[in-house]
Image (tube, rainbow, N blue to C red; front, side, top):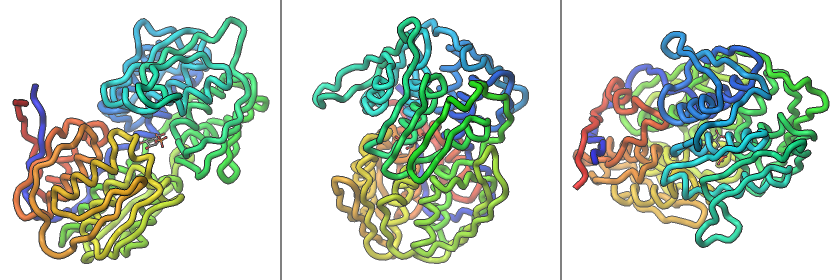
Length: 456
Ligand code: S3P
């Protein structure tokens, strides 16, 4: 078997402006709602590979047609709410948790049976959180029992069909953990339900589904951390639409952190999504003194976007990340860990137990990677305590990504400030969210090379 590694030579600076990959979360939702619209929609900037390709293939398996009209411009022939067709085979979601959980909600409302399957990594991730509330509103779903945790369910899921004549019921859920994937699954199932959908979260998770539905005239109300979909006031029709997917702040975060690590860096990133429920990382940067300028420039279907500008200005203060800010920076924690490794003092990350069930156990993985580069850190049940080392280089290392794209990118940044060449192993996963990561870094002025390696 052949693996791809990154060989990283330290030094250089990130200078210039580059496009960042488009936002996966928004793209998944645009694909699904485009498929359910009554007519053709135009989606500009849906990545052809990675996680969003999983959602697109799944929708194709359900009878939806997509046409690439020009590079980056996708036309989706919406089939209407009732137009999905039974899939001929199990739908493979690979490693994409967002595809899996959002589609679970959509498929739970259908009159046909379907199966959602997953790769080895996603097959270990908890699904009871989405199955249980869907079952409570009448969905028929079976999963694989967790070998040791009673009540937990794992992929694959066998879904539906709904019994003849039955429809999904009203749902009133108070989620124990904030989760945009679970909330979105319930809202998507709610489009078909006989009653309303009410969801309360301890802290509002990313609200892309709510914003897109509202932009399409679906009566979704949000008050504090409560969301309501009131189907009684709706004609059950999603109009066709046109969207340009904003840049992904979660991908931009790695470039921003790279620029904050390397003296002489000067970076401009344009058209990046600035949704308030995703801005925790930008608030963290402001708190630790990063010289970041944010300029808002309009919106796309209710999603604000804008330009980010940053210049290296010396080591930053230590910070702390937890509570509701952590929820709004959940995918940026690996990037924050890298920054903490080069900041003054001790940085604390807490309330982050959810990171243990992401693409990998990100708290354990980051502790392992930080230590490999000689950074002292303590792993806590729900976080990390990281001792910054702003002076002198880190120790060069050879580290494994563990199949997690954000861990691979975090390790690559640490390698840029090491005392010699480093190697990040098994970086094929980076394509999930940032397919041209190494090329982008090279274009900005640092030496990261992808090399193939045969497994021994
Ligand atoms: C996502 C929600 C978050 C996030 C993931 C994308 C989404 O997961 O970590 O990368 O698009 O809905 P949870 O819902 O598990 O918090």
